[in-house]
Length: 423
Ligand SMILES: *[C@@H]1O[C@H](CO)[C@@H](O)[C@H](O)[C@H]1NC(C)=O
Ligand SMILES: *[C@@H]1O[C@H](CO)[C@@H](O)[C@H](O)[C@H]1NC(C)=O
Ligand SMILES: *[C@@H]1O[C@H](CO)[C@@H](O)[C@H](O)[C@H]1NC(C)=O
Ligand SMILES: *[C@@H]1O[C@H](CO)[C@@H](O)[C@H](O)[C@H]1NC(C)=O
Ligand SMILES: *[C@@H]1O[C@H](CO)[C@@H](O)[C@H](O)[C@H]1NC(C)=O
Ligand SMILES: *[C@@H]1O[C@H](CO)[C@@H](O)[C@H](O)[C@H]1NC(C)=O
Ligand SMILES: *[C@@H]1O[C@H](CO)[C@@H](O)[C@H](O)[C@H]1NC(C)=O
Ligand SMILES: *[C@@H]1O[C@H](CO)[C@@H](O)[C@H](O)[C@H]1NC(C)=O
Image 1 (cartoon, protein in one colour):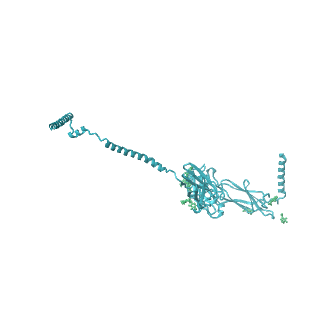
Image 2 (cartoon, rainbow, N blue to C red; image 1 turned 135 degrees about the vertical axis):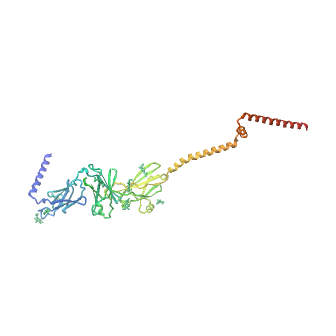
Image 3 (cartoon, rainbow, N blue to C red; image 1 turned 45 degrees about the vertical axis):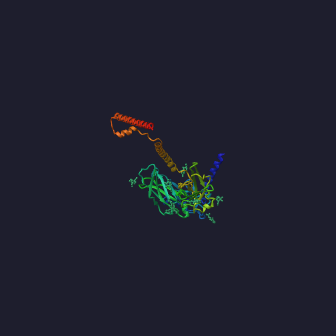
């Protein structure tokens, strides 16, 4: 089964070669003087001249593609340019033909390549990435190459059409292992701007490392600023969230996430917002230029904390991966205040202790009133006679005194009785 197919293939090849020799008019001669140059940081331009001895009836078109049949193009121009990160060798092949018909056999293809700048590939920086923040400044970060000294001084150059020239990024900074640099790059109203890219090159001052390149399309790697929550409110048991989008972005170009944390149920819900219209038309006109979203199934009586973040979507941008930071959180509802708990926890024991002390003092007073203290005669006499050492003497004296009074009382009683008897 295989053999006839192979034979046929061989036969076709022979036929083609034969045709090439027999009728050279069918395919055109190859293009001449193909050359390559670089503009800006990595705009690579190939130019060539028309073939010599082309058929006079032929309206020349040029077929071109990169190394492995990528980005085929058939056009009448004698040049082709491409933004190419020059980290790898890249080659363009060009041939001529007489129509834009893809099935027409082009001439012999001529190839011209451009190689990366000289230097040890291991010395080039790695993971060169850029993010366009808020459509107002770009931050690029990278890691040092393997074969580099730690005191390498890096420089970043950037270019895009609206700048008109190559600029150097001024404030190189380090974030842990990463090295980064930020530069101002604002959104330009010109719509063609969005089809363009920023060209980036990182090298070192001393020229010891191989330069690295990156091309950042302005329709991707966009990180918006976080939105601002303006109001939370409950209407008929539904939670309505209103927020303002970051400047510079159309609402339809953004996707949203609303996070709702309920402190009592300890739930953590994230809602992806597709439709940013609230049914409650009254809310719409309430805050000018805000986006509204109704969060379903939120418990009104408890504390709910809401945050929002945004990212670009595929309607206006090429990628939709970079979320903004979360907005500031806003809460609605009540929770028993933790400081209130702390104060009550501290104050209650103090009050109880104070009450007990007051009660004890009061009880002591009460005891004095109810049970007056029994006088201690010893004490009294001690005070009367001063500090005498001879206690026995004192007690004898006391005895005598007591006896005398007793005798006197007795005599009085006797006299009284005598008086009564005489009457
Ligand atoms: C190719 O370039 C050389 C030198 O620049 C020039 O003399 C020659 O005419 C060019 N060939 C064509 C076909 O234009
Ligand atoms: C070019 O076209 C004319 C008329 O269209 C024809 O007479 C002539 O033979 C053609 N020449 C070649 C070389 O094919
Ligand atoms: C392209 O050429 C093929 C054969 O050479 C032909 O069948 C086809 O119709 C042509 N297409 C156009 C758009 O001319
Ligand atoms: C975001 O861009 C707007 C408009 O260019 C600007 O006013 C605002 O300050 C920017 N925000 C930040 C955080 O740079
Ligand atoms: C980087 O710059 C510092 C200060 O300008 C200098 O001391 C150091 O030698 C430089 N490093 C290299 C590798 O040139
Ligand atoms: C986003 O959060 C990071 C980390 O907290 C912070 O460094 C950065 O400044 C924030 N960006 C904006 C635009 O607020
Ligand atoms: C939030 O919205 C509610 C209901 O529309 C309104 O009563 C309240 O005043 C608004 N609060 C703020 C801060 O705008
Ligand atoms: C909401 O809960 C999640 C998960 O517990 C937590 O990561 C997040 O920080 C909370 N949000 C706020 C605003 O506290």
